[in-house]
Length: 275
Image 1 (cartoon, rainbow, N blue to C red):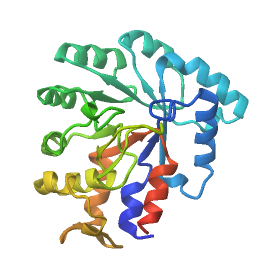
Image 2: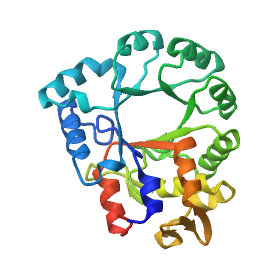
Image 3: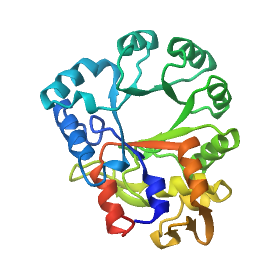
């Protein structure tokens, strides 16, 4: 494996098996996470994503699997952030909180409730709120897809978000619709009659963050051969990024993405001979 790929993928994929289009039961999702953390590619596995409202259900499932001590959690907050904070206080396995906000007031209220105890990702559609997120010591969150075509943002919108975060030196994560390494037309769900649509690729997103000046072009890139990965760096159509910058990118900017499948991204990376 090339060093650049190892750096880019390290702890990258947060497992969201509870959510569409997978929509697994809690026991099945916990069992999968346990399997993935024991697998050859466990180093690419990030956190287990769970709604705050289902933490007790998670405890029961994890106890049955005898693996509660190995869970690394990212908790999705509800509209009642104060109640969520009370529910998760004292839980050592929680690494981050994820929430949505539509106003500065909501962000300020959440920051007060959370108090800096956990890394917090805030999903916003209004990019002017990124300044508030940064001021409060939080991170941003970008929704990159969904189970219907209208849920998939344009490359231009994603590029605008990426550049805004890079300019502010603001860390962020992505969620939804990033099962595939490279931009491609795929089925939006696992149903036999599922609609097909062009979905964003997580390699595209990583490299767009590394090369924000070319973000729109990279996000539109559908040719895997346009990307190259070596021990000293990675490149898109000759535009090279050294491994030191890739490491900084992963640490300070694009920290992870949520996917309801861990197997799908890994298998497709193998098919491309990048793993």
